[in-house]
Image (cartoon, rainbow, N blue to C red; front, side, top):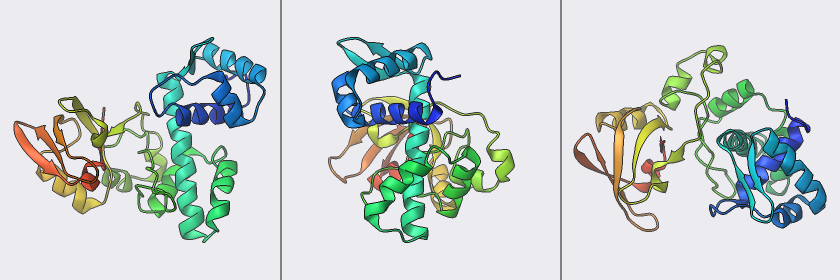
Amino acid sequence: MYLVKKEVVEQYLKTILSLSEDGKPVKTTELSKKMELAPATVTESLQKLASDGLVKYEPYHGTTLTEEGLVIATKIRRKHRLLERFLSDMLGLESSKVHEQACEMEHKLSDEAEVALCRILNHPDTCSDDSQSIPPCGLDVKSCVECKDQALADIVKQKERKSLKPLTELGAGEKATIQFIRGGRSIVQRLNSMGLTKGAQISLQKSSPFSGPVEISVRGCKVALGRGVAKKIFVQ
């Protein structure tokens, strides 16, 4: 059980995730400024989060998320961005109000409601206003198609997997395993026919700058993918 309220824990983890996009430990002063809290309060909270195994906290050096902390932070980010899409696309809420409203709702949204929301929105890739990427779900399914083919009550019982990253974030020569493909039946079937299936080992050969194509090696063959399609393939 967390030593501070669930909502507070999630807000800390989400903020640390946001501030650590560059891969560097987050300084307490940065976190204090971002969350508008006194440094002493932040330090005490970080020590509690560290004792719960959610962060690694080193005084005068900074804070990083543990694997468990990263999973929770990514899930909250996903819920927030799905809610932004729902509030904007389905309810027509003004863009200036969407973020704040999503912040209030994200901590109350159940995992089952999250899956249902994603289905209603047709498994969106990005937020509607700023095009920020929506993280894939944490369910151990191979694609959105497999998710849609199962009953909601059954799908939420799936074992949670570790955080994934899009294929486009791999470095040249880096190897990974495909874990999830986002999209409808046609895109999933097309990628499957190219040998891109869950469990397939891939290696990034070349990634063109900006919006250029991505070249990978899979099952002994080289395959070129448009960057938009490559972003739908998540690996570990």
